[in-house]
Image 1 (cartoon, one colour):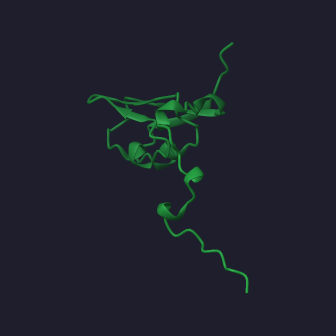
Image 2 (image 1 turned 180 degrees about the vertical axis):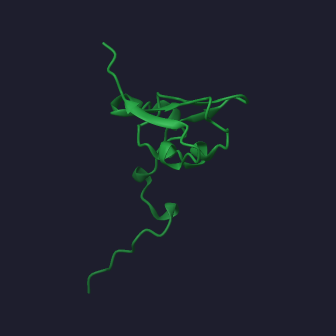
Length: 97
């Protein structure tokens, strides 16, 4: 009888090659986005909802204002969608020549 393959149930069950071995800071992934988030600081209430929902950890807080690290932002728009005061607008990315 053929041995049945066990489905991975957690990260410990994954083969070694499936685990990243470098820091995410080494992978700048923002160069291919079509839209980028722009934060209207006048509307922003600094609730940090955008930071909580950002899948790329591209939202930054310096103690005074919220900003976006465009080196890592992929332009998914989740931050703009989740912003309760609509302080984030997704604008078309312009290519730098």
